[in-house]
Image (cartoon, rainbow, N blue to C red; front, side, top):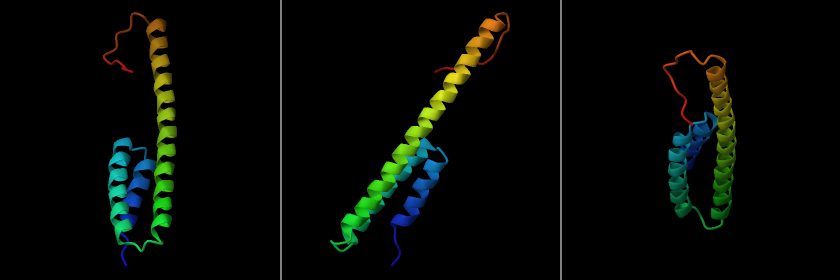
Amino acid sequence: MNDPVQPEEGVLRQAVQSGDFAGAERAARLYVAAVQGALAQLPRAQGPARLREACELIEWARRCLCAARVRLNGERSGVQHLAAFQRTAQPDCLHTWKIDG
């Protein structure tokens, strides 16, 4: 039997591992829909194990994306501090770019 959940799981894992926040959200929605469809077709005894696996994957994705968001915020903060330093170190220097936070 072909498992319709596995392709969606792979897409979700790839999006999370690449730090694609929007892609991970889309993939999570498709994964949940696939799991719901699979649960309806599984024998009642296998449902809880499948649901537990799905919950573990979603929790893993959530934790990874939260850590990525914290890391990116730290990098952004560092760039903002560098830009502020540059403005004070060279006040007469004109830049054509601006970092919005």
